[in-house]
Length: 89
Image 1 (cartoon, rainbow, N blue to C red):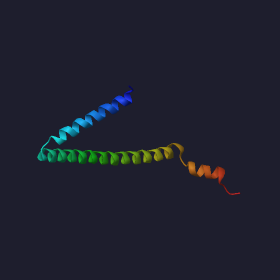
Image 2 (image 1 turned 120 degrees about the vertical axis):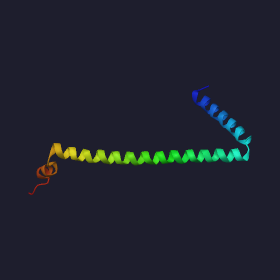
Image 3 (image 1 turned 90 degrees about the vertical axis):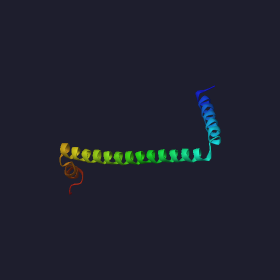
C-alpha cells in the first residue's frame, strides 16, 4: 500500500470517527462546538489577512529600496542610455 493510499485511508477513518462523535453529541454540545470552530476560523482568517498586508508592505519596501539602490550605484543611467541609443541625429 502506497503512502498516498494509507493517508487517504487514515483521513477517511478520522472523518468517520468525527461524524460518529458529532452524531452522539447533544444539540447544545453541537452548537458549542460549531461556535468554537467558527471563532477559530475567524481568528485564522484575521491572521492570514494581517500576514498578507505585512507581506505587501514588505515587498513595497523592498521595491522602493531596490530602486533607490540602483539610482545610487548607477547614477543617471536613464540619461546615459538615452544619450547612447536615443540621441538626436
